[in-house]
Length: 392
Ligand SMILES: Cc1cc2nc3c(=O)[nH]c(=O)nc-3n(C[C@H](O)[C@H](O)[C@H](O)COP(=O)(O)OP(=O)(O)OC[C@H]3O[C@@H](n4cnc5c(N)ncnc54)[C@H](O)[C@@H]3O)c2cc1C
Image (tube, rainbow, N blue to C red):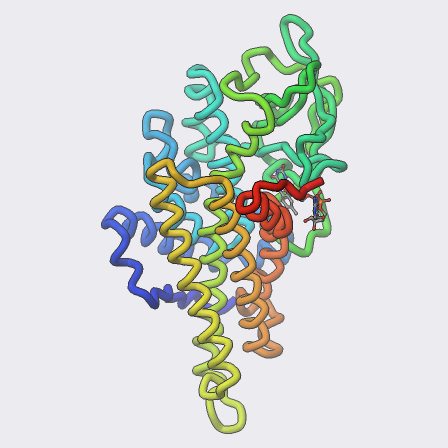
């Protein structure tokens, strides 16, 4: 793969809106990605393997629980720093950002928000360093966009719960030490349970042959009469709103992350357009290629403004689920469109692993589908503005 020469576009001087801390956090993440992710990620993606050696570094740059309080091992940062870290990690690879998002917002967040003090003390510090990795089990083979229909269930056996069912498409599942699993009790109410690797009847077969997020490990979670200790139930919140609260946090991070992937594609295409000579001049001197680049930087700039404002609203506790849906949907579509255009700008070279664009493009096919599909986010916006849910 080519050396990582990335230069971040900032067309509207948005750095002026960031604090010194934001810039320090972002620059540290950027430097780490250049040193530890860019040189190896293409190889791992080609081999469909998650690079486990980067886990410790991800923890050190605040990639695990950036906004979790310091007393639990988190970085104690605000929402804009969290977003900037996701942007930088996804600039390297969406699969690596997925690992970070799952650990932060889908495992640490529910334990922090819905867990007991004992659970927080037991799990969060180890998750923050990456000593333990976690995964989040919501999606089932027959219930994706409609997780409320889930059939995974648990029964109260007095001194423990008995868990049965299966989850599918679970990021980090093949190597995670713990899983935050959403299941229905005997009354049909959804609760979160912490399931630990090694519990009898719990297995995590890996999902193979993905063409997308190849450097992220995906698997199933199978529960066959798993005895879960009573103290592993998350008592603070139940119902579908509990997992959806985690998804709000993760989707917000994805909205930032997608900008990272888009910036990398734009930066690569811009550099290539100045170097590649056809018909005796750089392809960047042609109107058609300039149109592509001009539209890319316009869309990136709009997405940067959207996420910055959303970050301010989240810092103030005012961001709504529907606002987060809009940003996730807009930014991922923006990124996938830029990846497709940028890939064409590199001609045949665009399909090789010499450049990051095709990997970003394939990764974004998962990003546009998971954490709520593109269609579902549109329905959320539609419901928000009309008051009519159109899901059924
Ligand atoms: C690589 C990867 C990693 C993932 N990681 C995780 C994870 O860690 N944890 C987890 O729990 N899940 C995870 N997922 C699952 C992901 O969230 C689901 O794939 C997603 O929610 C969509 O569900 P589905 O695949 O069952 O599609 P479906 O829900 O079957 O949707 C199929 C199509 O129908 C459309 N559709 C559905 N309902 C409607 C409707 N009412 N109106 C109009 N159109 C509709 C959808 O938009 C989509 O286009 C992951 C998925 C992938 C691909």
